[in-house]
Length: 270
Image (cartoon, rainbow, N blue to C red; front, side, top):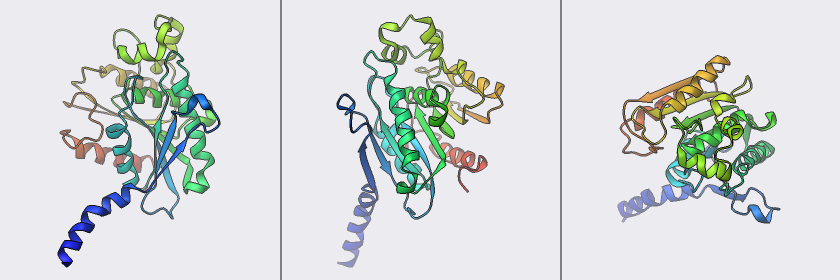
């Protein structure tokens, strides 16, 4: 009987941990922004002041990979001592400013609730994958100074809207009818928007990514380097696109180790 109880507890404990999540509307007073939400995952040692990450899932600005590039990542970051917040941002649907508005609002909400959620408002970073990486890089380069993150971790990000290397789906969905507007193409080619206030950044990608060409990350890394922004780029020999935090990614453990090592090196965590 005792062994059966222990077995049952082993199944239910992860569920109890998974329930340590808050869900909140990002714009509670805006009827036309009801879709935008945040999910707050708290670390187990919630009595300690913790760093935080805002997680932006990918999906080509047409939908969101909320599990593998959202909730699954949040659970891992929370298990490593972060307040991890998944952003369910609105799709542009012809209004290209909408996703960044949500991301800026989310960063603002995190810092405003630093005491409530026991987080260090000087260590609020952004994590983004694919098109979510484009949003995270937009937050790092285009946002008002007060809403910029303190660090960024970008997984196989969309960076450039130059036709030679753009992810055409993300470009089309974000720009809509403005897809040929050269000013907007340059504006959202984020390697061209890096400045001295862009945060330190870790870039993770695969050489054989046929969805978002690796040159996206390389150009962003070069721009960071030119502005003397601390940056690291790690390109794995294979893996393609969209691996997020999947167990079947060949370098699953290496990715986790690299991230934690970088976070320690940059003094985000001890």
